[in-house]
Image 1 (cartoon, rainbow, N blue to C red):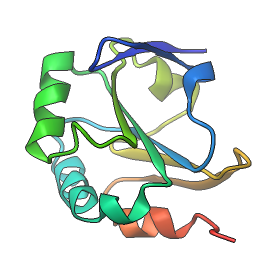
Image 2: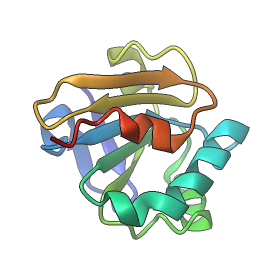
Image 3: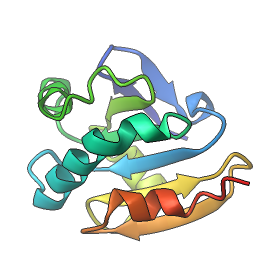
Image 4: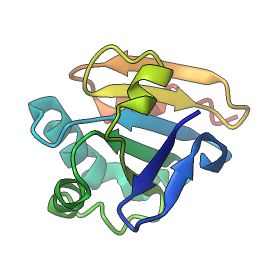
Length: 130
């Protein structure tokens, strides 16, 4: 199990992960792909309020906050930004690259596992909305 802190100072553990459709993302503010993907997410997030995003990086909270603000995603209610200094999440979920995406549907079933340059729309398309 992991225990990390989000940018509001709240501790987040595996038990705190939201119910329903969610996407866990491991990112790095310096990563070109990550920046392009957040740019895309900032444009389309309004249409996908039913999907919760939990963003993780080993970078310090102030860098995370700056990154989130840069894409106007710091106040999005469906996005949580977390600092994972010991890469606990990365290791626990056997992630192998950055950015790394894990999409879980409302039954908590893995529907997307991807890494690298990817269209956010493609990750979202794997959620069965039936």
